[in-house]
Image (cartoon, rainbow, N blue to C red):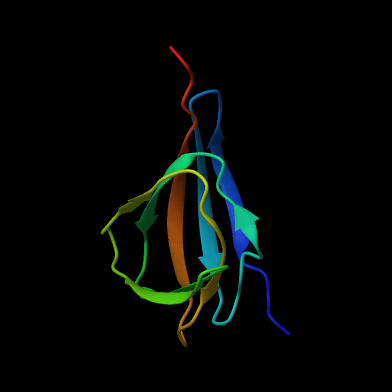
Length: 97
């Protein structure tokens, strides 16, 4: 049985949503879709597996090495390593105009 990743919301307003995610080994977010562009800032290192319709990828998280993705990403994120890891996700709630 896979455990669930733990999400702690820090900011959620008209402009951004900031969520801290913590993953035990094997923990997963569950399948989800990103409705906004987002930035992920790893707090710790680890192996992040993303499972999407197109297949699986594994990426190494490096503390402080942020990455950006456009809205529309659909995946399940899993800790593929043997140690816990954590990151902060910053969703950018763009408004027209």
